[in-house]
Length: 219
Image 1 (cartoon, helix red, strand yellow):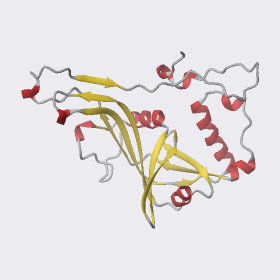
Image 2: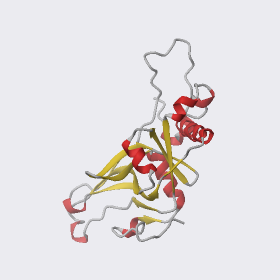
Image 3: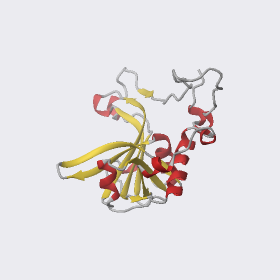
Image 4: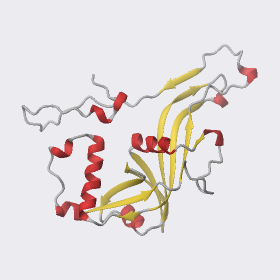
């Protein structure tokens, strides 16, 4: 069950709110991009960052000299948003055109992961989410690289989720207008693999499709 705090309570289109934590996890896992807010002296800034989930925490990483990372490492309150766009809703009236989407908002503050071994484990976990089995084949991070990287985590203890997937919401009086109404679905195409121009001849192509279930495109 998701939290229900003054910040996380969905007020606009409350009927689209979800309280199932598994839906929150799905939105985060499929999105991979978090838009993160910080408040600087010059004003608020929202920056997109790669983000991944391990159990009930979200992680981000960046260079030690990153202004975003330095700001968040101080423990300031922040907000992360994740969005999956699923398609357009075409109504019989201009007013009721809309969209299908899944979105999540996470509130809280980040803490630093300082243990080098734990940092290495969590960064490798991200790689394994993207490409299962890849850490067995690649050169893993050196101590120097790990020390140059800041890793932050935020717990998923305060979050909200909205899912818009309903029917066309035309007014009853507009149902007789002779115009097509329905949906334009959007689907993310993942794959097939595209080799680097520097790839040596004779290296077999790996199979990472298991990380993407039915979303993998083998064509």
